[in-house]
Every structure is written in C-alpha cells, then in structure tokens.
Length: 377
Image 1 (cartoon, rainbow, N blue to C red):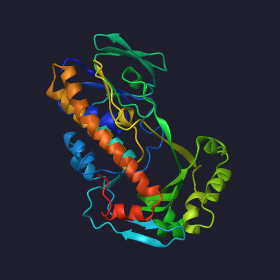
Image 2 (cartoon, rainbow, N blue to C red; image 1 turned 90 degrees about the vertical axis):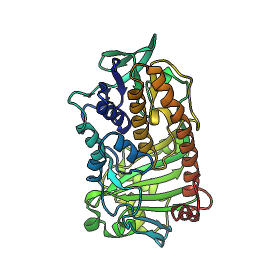
Image 3 (cartoon, one colour; image 1 turned 135 degrees about the vertical axis):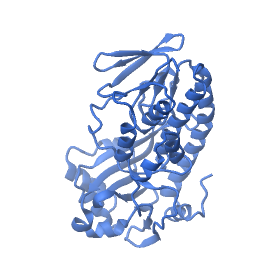
Image 4 (tube, one colour; image 1 turned 180 degrees about the vertical axis):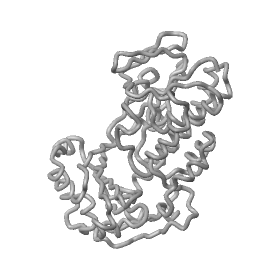
C-alpha cells in the first residue's frame, strides 16, 4: 500500500491495527500522548473474549504469545451480599472462554511486536483539520504537525479526530466508579482477600456496589460503583485521600467490614471514574481518508467488552486495508459497514448488563446473568 497509515493513540486498538498492518507489510505510524510506555499504570485485568479479542490476536499473529500471559484461575466469579454472605461462587475450572491477562502486559506484547520507531511517544494530539482530497493535518501539543491521506482516530473517549466525522460527544451516564487498590492482600488484608476469592467479586445492591478483581501478586483492584450526580462527585475532595475514602465508604454504612475495607484500607489514593458514553448506534457518514476505532468510535458503559471491541476494530480495519491496498475508501467503507452494527449491538448489551448489575433486581439479576439464566441478547 502506497499510503502510510497514521494512527492517533497507542491503546490496545491502535496497536492491534498497527500490528495487523505490519503483518501485511503496510507501514504505519502511531502517535501517542504519553511520554513513554511506562508513563502511567495501564489499568487492571482484562478478560479477552473468544469471539472478539482472541480473533483479533490471531489476526495479529500473537495468539500463542497471548496465552503465555494468561493468569490461571482468574476467571473465578463470586457474588456477595452486603453482609458478606456468598450468594454465588463459581470457581475457574479452566473451561471458560474469557481468559484473564494484565492490560499492561498485553499492551507491551503488542508494542514489542512492532518495528522500532513505529510509536512516537509524547505526541499529544490537540486537533485535526481537513485539507481536501482525503488528506488531513493533525496538530500536536509540542507544535508539530503531520499530514496524512489515511488517518485513524484510536484516541479514546475524548478523541481529537472524532470531530472530523461527527459532532457527537460523550455524555455522563449517571454512574461513577471509584478505583482503589490493596497490595499483598493475602498477608496484609486477609479478610478482604478471602472475600474476593481467586478472580472477580461483586457485591451489588440497586444503584451501587463494591466490585473487586484479584490481579497478579495478590493485588486487589476495586471499582466502587455509585449512582450519583457529577455535582455530588465534585463535592468530594479527592486531593485528601483519607477523607475521600471515608466519604465513599459512608455510602456503604453497615456493610461487612471485609467489603468496606476495600475502600477504607486502599493503598493508593481513590480515583473517581465518572462513566460517559456516546449515543448507542453512533455512526457517521463516510468522510474520505479518516475513520475511528474503539472508544473514539463507540464509547459505551463498561461491560467487559470495550478493550475487546477496540482490538477487533483494529484487526478488522487492518485486514480491510490489506484487502483493498489501492482503494482507501473501499477499505474504510467495508470496515465501517461491519463496525457500526457490531458496536451498536454491544452498546445495547452494555446497557442491559449495567441494569443486571445495578438495577432494581440485583443481585438476583446479576446471578442469573452469570449462570446463564439471563441472556444479554
């Protein structure tokens, strides 16, 4: 292909695209705002699904390397009541189709699979404009620019490429996660470690819940879910970690101490994550020379599918470009025609999963979902 591909964003989706293009001998450059691969924590555990993320890794030629990253036993699932009662306990018997890996390790696998210099670090995109004839210019915070005939926005929820295609912006969905960590939990926090078990644990009631995941090295990664206004969240002083943790824990007054300790005993400052989403079924008319993938294209409520979809988007886009090496528009059209309905269905599923997790019938609806008695679609 004579047109080099310019990718904005070195998340899992952008890197999967770059890798699949490399497999097909097509050059790509990835511009990433972070100054280095280790500039920040890359989040926690990801379950890589057998119908989305795993096919993407096969297209990237990395499925065997991926299997070397899988943490055995981490597909175990528990649901607890507020008093700590175990309502569901499903061990990992090795037959599940969603093996767990650390996000940072998966990202590093993709980075290591690319030719040196593919990713340009410290390149924070600040805007993009059309130049005509399918060409676009991206401006970076360091004053640099790049002009390209094939631009891909893989730059997440607040994409700087998205305005070239659509006026849609993410909106707050009314739920926030607050993120905390406990380290070396089996020794330092044994009651909480026992409550979480070997994989993931949810303790939901209508409108809120405490969720945690066991990561490598005995780390417990907690996402506290609250239905709250942005104004309420803004009223908490997260620059005072102890006070912020205490205020969040007040929402779970009377809950079992091994659950509330996941908040109050956190060994990192609690971080608020207000959830935003693009409209379900978000799409755009074809604009020559540019497209989006992952959260830039279809930001939705968390459902365990976001990273998987981004990787599948990247793989499918890479294959479409390889299949139409002399016709960028044919490639982008083919990719978008498949991506739009796929992401719309996933967004609808994400809304239903959110309702199962935090709606009026939880925890029973969540248990029914996990045991196969509730169908997402």
